[in-house]
Length: 497
Image (cartoon, rainbow, N blue to C red; front, top):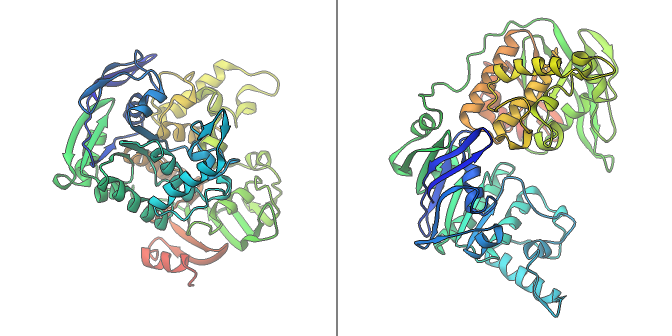
């Protein structure tokens, strides 16, 4: 890709970016959210067709012209976006060959389709039944089906955008094993990730984008994480976690006997958990996937679709919370794990999203007051440094980090006494993480009670005053900041008290 320029109204997303990839090369593309990584890959994959950008795309030393995704696929380019594009109601085989089904006289040859799918899955050493519904698979297996779908097109270039964001450690190892086989077959791999440990583990070269420009390209063995992070953010980066100096006050929230049942049966997902959080305190909840962390927060917030039971006290007074509206009225905010499904209305503007939870307080009970809303939204936009032309920017045009800041800003506008944060930095870059960490620390210093769930153990240990550990829905450990070590927390997270 040579001298690529891509503009949106009021924003130059790519400003003369160049990027090269060799056969069998693993080339990582890193940068802060909004740096232009996804935009560059959408140019490469034909999502942004010729005529909507400047510059040249060369494949095998020949300039190529892509009028759309089909042209890019025909040139041997396949892209796997962070948000999976599978149809969950269809089978694995149907998804792999969707739109390209083997047929004769307009009739699909189903036996041929499943034979090809089975052969492809076996070549990747995947023990997945091609006749099983995609919806019945775990997210990790769905990610691998996406890769199989891309390779069914005989891709010479494979782009992976945050492929491990929702995978377990074992699924990550399976994925990396497959990628190594593809490298050996001569497939060029472009890897976009905020997880720098993974980037350095598997990459041959690393290119850093910042503000739509290429600022560095290095062989992976000729640089280090500090150097890459410095190039990403344009400055030296010190200790990523702020030193907490929180004055703990009275108990703001107390949960007693919380038990949560699965939505489709009576399996216990959370089993008789009791804990509290003080004003000015950050309580981290650690645990492996399936430990019940998200279910715990969702049930306290009154949003769990299944059965649950618990007693809740806010500021020492028993309260009843049967819905998110009840929780908001009692001063509880909830930054959910999946911002796109539960945190945002992506087709609406920053202004509409940010004022949604506080609309009655800002505008009144009958009519909206756009001037008041705009003034109210301006505060979090400045404080959280949301990168957008104006509050009227449509939310789905923002980077992941800026979308996450909009979700956080939405809850800050209700002036919560208690804030739940479920995976608040998932899928965002180091620079945006630091900004959110600083905001969490500042909110705690101002007296807000915060409950933090994160799959990143350093994040839990670095931000929390106290750490609670869950295993299969039960509390198996509770540690002060001084007591909480990775070894102790992981011991409790694997079921040992």
